[in-house]
Length: 123
Image (cartoon, rainbow, N blue to C red; front, side):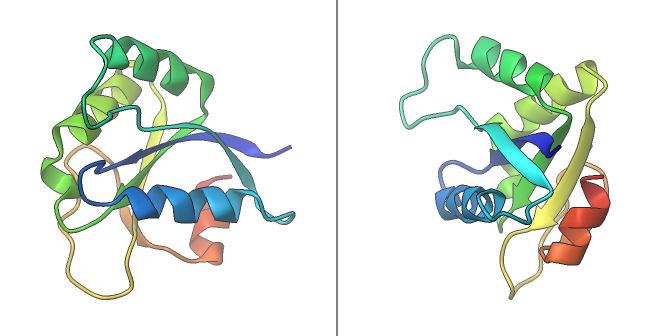
């Protein structure tokens, strides 16, 4: 059985990271499935937070995809608080190969994105 995850990411700067993790989830050997992902949109619905809260409740783990500005993305910070309120495991993965990244406060340990790390942290 695959681990259900909620993917949190900086909508304004890193949408491609969401696409990459969804592609990996579709692989037959993937240890996880994406049940939902960050719900902030360019013009967010007035109830996106309630929808995100429910989606996070259905997940076992919240996976934060970290880009250069993720540590200060308001939607990501709210989603992490929601996950912590629900006692969900939160982990963060660096989304890009190059660069220095600031960990997102409250999102747990920061890992490099590779299959071995994904398998280990999503178990």
